[in-house]
Length: 336
Image (tube, rainbow, N blue to C red; front, side, top):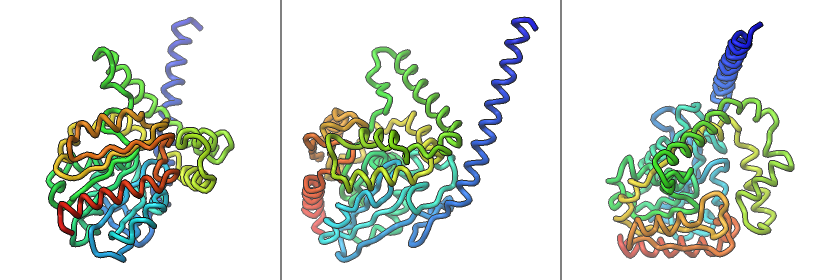
């Protein structure tokens, strides 16, 4: 067989392998969607997904909506759920594909769709008074996506926002590239890597990587700085282990092309808390002061020394105090 024939055969095998991988990936996605229906109490989204929700309505107003990030569930906000319910209605929910919420497949696994979901939660469970949206990591990106889709909510229905351990600029740092070519290369590499992981997710998921010791070690390094409280480390790594790899990989495709910088303008009409840990290995800490500067004078910047990505769990007293100060500013604005 000639070299050309060998090359042609290799090409056929590669194509066949890719097609087989795509077929396996789609079959796995359908199985996951069928068995992940969501549980009550819930908000039903307009594409049929049931988002599992909890509401603490000891206090009438304002309403605080807590929006978690990728790989975890609403339980990551346990410290805030306990601290805030004495002075606000608190709503928390599992984002689609996470925790006890439903999953409609990869088509809905976008930051834009998460923002749309948040809008429906606010519409259905926002109560009669002002609403404050609090997003951590990908949850903060969902807040920005809502601001992009429905900017008119901010300053009317939504009276305040908190963006924790998150950013508006592209996650691949393309905006800091020295040339347009370099920026496109960065975006291309991150997008290609995300699609590759999505393709091999059934194989990776079979090994349950975040239940292994190396997987847990990687998560601890990514989520925390220093030696985190044992309970917080167990809880968050356990949530990641329970989230299907197919769900995680589906969201990475959207995160690879994420850019919500234009949405920041909508937040200038309300009090905003921008908070980050100074030792965050997931979202660069410099993202927080840049975003606060873009929002302007209504933004309060809080940087928590020696805190990692999961700052709301490891430094709960500081975060709870900052959220309390945000509520004070919202109530001074609205009289609620």
